[in-house]
Length: 128
Image (tube, rainbow, N blue to C red):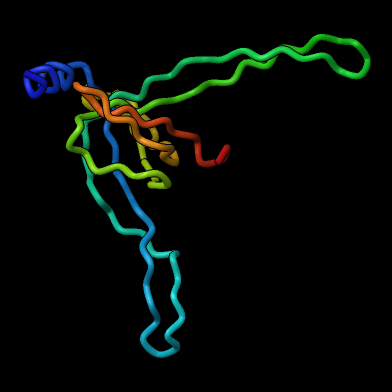
């Protein structure tokens, strides 16, 4: 039943994602480990980047009320996609609609598995 729902949800996933993960490598000569190397976990993954906004208000020292509107993002995809906290997601919006949009880098938060999909909060790399 849930696989049918996942297939149906794929019909409204128009964004494309490449998933990269940092791995630990050990230099053979020095024996020093490094986590700077990235490997591609998956490419051309159909996702939906869900964007919503949250508003916060605050008072300044001068008594002026400020309102900050910040976007929040979630990636929605099939449950069999391997995304872990800290993965790098390179997303092209509306790729499967034939749009040529620039790729944007995000960093994955803690994935949450729902019955019909995987929900991953993501942060723009410049915010993380």
